Length: 68
Image 1 (tube, helix red, strand yellow):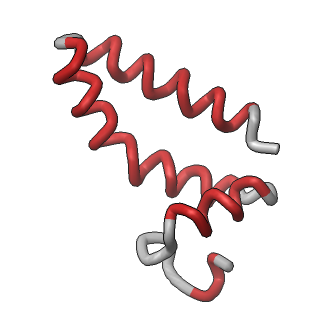
Image 2 (image 1 turned 45 degrees about the horizontal axis):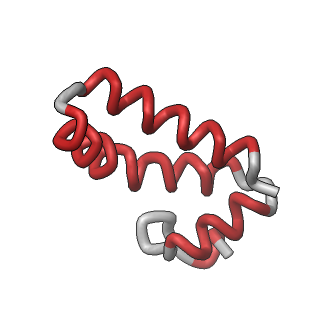
């Protein structure tokens, strides 16, 4: 799927499906796509940037571990 279009043009659904099939580059693309907006949202919610980064990282670690 990813070979057909650049990762910036690839839908979240396609990236996630490729990630579930073992593509680490698809996972990296999802992390890059969502890191800034989610950390920003979490920082506004918690008023703690370091905590927000930790929550983001822990969430994506769990997603990575449970991908199958």
